[in-house]
Image 1 (cartoon, helix red, strand yellow):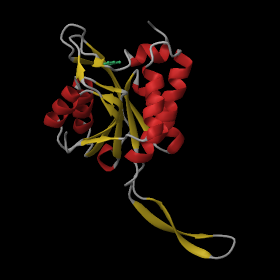
Image 2 (image 1 turned 30 degrees about the vertical axis):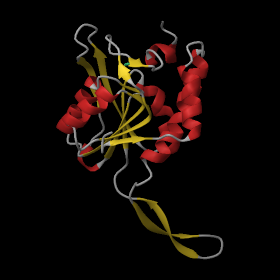
Image 3 (image 1 turned 180 degrees about the vertical axis):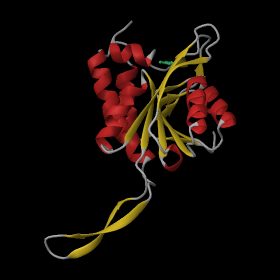
Length: 210
Ligand code: URA
C-alpha cells in the first residue's frame, strides 16, 4: 500500500492480536497480550539498529564483540495507550530513554490536543520510536511527530498494533520520512474515527475504563 508501511504479519502477532480484538477479553489479558506483541514488534522495528564492536574477553580468548552503536534510543509514548507498548520495548532495550507526549482527541473534530510533553535531551542524535497502539486518523501521531521534529528528532519510526489505511495515508503525506510498523492494516475508519474491525478503544480496553 505505502512504501512507508511495514506490516509485521508474524503468526504469533496475528494470533495474539485476534485474542485482543475479541470484545470479551479481560483487561488483564489484554495488557499481557499487548506486552507480548510489543516484544515481537520491537524485534522487527529494531532489526537494523547500527552496531559497532567492542573488545571483550570471553573465557577462551579476546574478541571484537558487536554492541549497539551511538546514542541511546528514545521510546516516545503517546499517552495513555502508548504505555501498553512501552513496557515490552523497555524489556528489549532497558537502557533506552523514554519520552511522553500527552494528546487527547477532540471528540468533535478528532484533532489532537497536546496537554503534556517530556522528552530527553539530544533528540537530534537519537533514534526515536513513537508508540501508540492505534493509528486511526493519525492526527495524534502526526502532531506528536511534529513536536519531536521541533525538538530536533531526525530519525523517527512509528509503531502501532493496528493501523487504518486513512491514517497511514495521512501520516505518509504529513511525514513521508517516518516508517510505520504495524501488526495489521484494518479496512477503514468509522464515522467516530474508530478502526474497523479494530479492537475498540485501546486505552479503555487496557485500563477497564469503559
Ligand atoms: N483509538 C482507539 O483506541 N481505537 C480506535 O479504534 C481508534 C483510535
